[in-house]
Image (cartoon, rainbow, N blue to C red):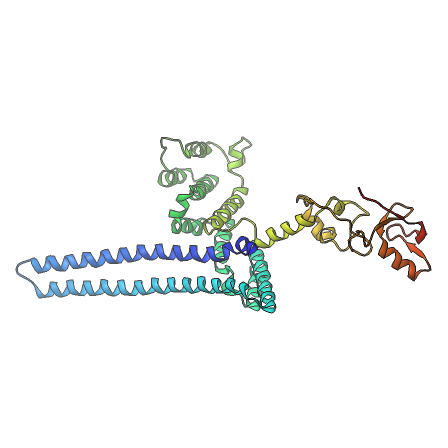
Length: 389
């Protein structure tokens, strides 16, 4: 169960966070509608208390109360429907994870295949291959077990930032402002800052000043954002082609890509997602468990070792080597462990192989063995036992 707890955390956490978000939004909507109903009821009560009572006014007040109650009912049903959909989503994922406890071997293999497909879909979504991810999820029938909708919403915001449009990102910040405030996000401020810079870049400096007065926070006691705001206002004195630092960096268009990366990090943090996909983490853990210095030495690579293969060899280069408390000798010819039943034998050229592999080759070649590394041929009697202390 250790791998389930480690790899399936986001599988349940993401729909739970979405449900929590829907609940909070619904609470605000219902509170607002209830306040409108109370106001309409107060108007009716005040109307009944007036002398003389006018039938037309009372009818209007009653119609207002009925209208507000109908609006409350309609929006309550909409919110309830959205929350029930989220609950069904959570239940479907929970049932899917519980299938892992099925004792049948065939069921476990099917479940692991689905988990691999989910990892691939998640990795494709993070890498920007949205169409591939959607098609794989549909073909594998795992749409409800992956977070495609979340990444599609993220995709719209990221693409708008790359087009230098801030509207969708600001709307996302407003929608999640309570959560963003909790982990002290400055994404909205950075987006506002970038819009100010674009106004200065276009030469519309008066509009930039008005924008800064409206959207930049006032200087506070602890000086938060004060330095950034001062630097931004000094930008009014420079042209976009300036070579003066740090104003040259403020005009750099690469800041839009930095905003995309910041949005992506905070979106993952908001939904309790890791920065790396589960596929990348799992692959790196497996490579680290198998990686040895021989994997990167010419002439010592093994065709049986995954890390020695070219693509995985590149992926494993920055990873740490495996920690082997008890090392074992493996015959590079047969892949079998060399022990008392298969003692290591050294050929005259210095290469070591298992006795069983050398005896098998000698029986097929009139007592001769050929070294797979150097292609040299020797009599099997020339091989000597190796004793490891």
